[in-house]
Image 1 (tube, rainbow, N blue to C red):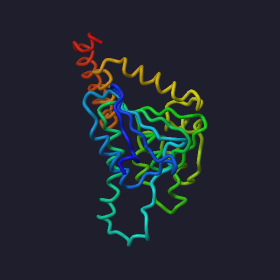
Image 2 (cartoon, rainbow, N blue to C red):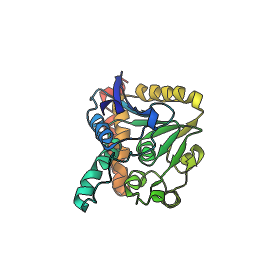
Image 3 (cartoon, rainbow, N blue to C red):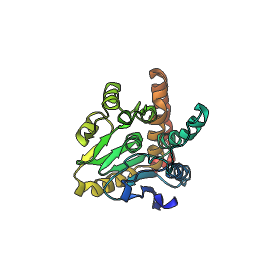
Image 4 (tube, rainbow, N blue to C red):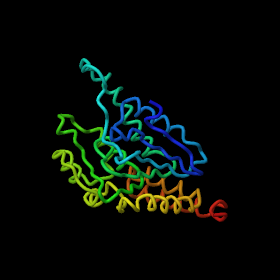
Length: 243
């Protein structure tokens, strides 16, 4: 299953690719574990993580386990089985460096959650998005956990309850992605973004991610004090003066 998710370091960029284009990059449980392991193994020298799918789709979601249906699991067993998904969402959200997702084609279910939980998401203008779980009689709180701080609640509830697919314009409108470009310009837009991120001083790059990761969990006054402290520490550091 190693080849289903691959990673390579390109300078200061750690590029992760979902690598089953023949299935729309559907991910098995083993592939999700592998993705989590790769996210945990990021070298300290890495300054940006990129995440994309091979071929024409980003990720069409989780793949059903092979073979005959398994017997129903007890609640604790089921919770442990699903922790591999929550682990990946948490590793992206809590990564010390920015995570950039690149979306072509379909981003469905788990794939949509991956795209939305990334810090910056650039999508082709013909990409499609969906939270299809309700249509399959699945209660999608796993996906919702990745989106709850990314997408306004009314938009999230509508997409969950209807299970309708939607386009890049709608994904941008609700805040699930950051930028839209034509398929032919997607690689160029990503390259420009990575160049700008890597041009920033490392302390500032990491501090922005740190503040974004932590500030929403505290009240406004404490968030402001946190911002003041980070601003003073980072902007007066010798590393910032060296660029």
